[in-house]
Length: 234
Image (cartoon, rainbow, N blue to C red; front, side):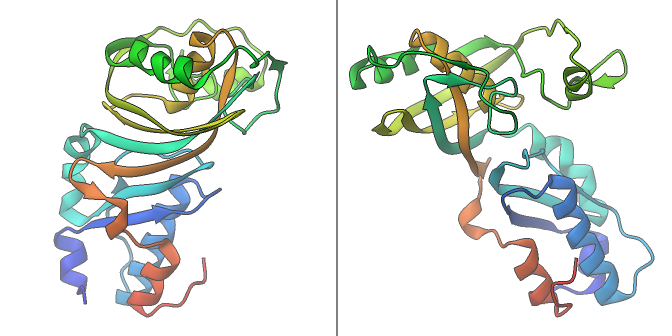
């Protein structure tokens, strides 16, 4: 069992973020539990790489002196699994917003889906989604998007190391992707739809690995609290 000193000196905690939680909520839940358990007024705590509320999976949370390791952990290669839904796009490229356009999918074959993955392997230029937390002129892009403002977003270089299709049941396509820091899987979904002369959006996402850390070794925030013996009040 971890002691107060362990958390202050630094721990790397692997959390399996629940659906619809923000990464910030997960950090806060742990912070609350550690402070309550050990009667601490404050403790340094932060995460190494945000997950969208609609994504689940691995969130690395660092405490105490280990918060210094966050930049290094953020730079690690990540693995995701999930589902693209073909034939429709949304403004946010995922289910956070409603479908805005529909496209035919009758022409899409299993072979064309598998072939399309090859277009994305290696170093590519990717345009981040307008509904993202990136900043432009001091405002977050999603704030500008919600105000209905047109924003020009610069593409950025990312690297897709592996891109595998694991199930095809149109309009759904399941995938596994291994990619560099800064990759938006929502943008990959959007671009994948275009590559198939159709449209697509991300309908499910799970982060399974960050570097050598695996979600199989992670616990949910509520299990973390129970293990600390502080119940699961939030």
